[in-house]
Amino acid sequence: MPITHDSLDGLRVLVTGGSRGLGAATVRRFVAAGASVLTASRRRPEEDSGARFIAADLSTQQGVAELG
Image (cartoon, rainbow, N blue to C red):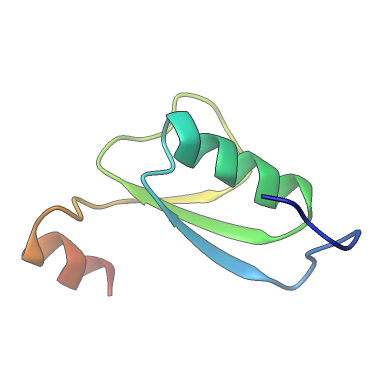
């Protein structure tokens, strides 16, 4: 995802599935650009990405309701 300006300061981003793979890479990119990031997934990320983490299983109606 290209970022067209120097900073995303003040932007708040929610990344679902941000504990590994593409989701984790997305989290790192937004954090590096200065955004405030919240990530939600079933599993805690293995490394500290600088984002806040909320445990949530978004494959269920209950998990979606709990996140909201």
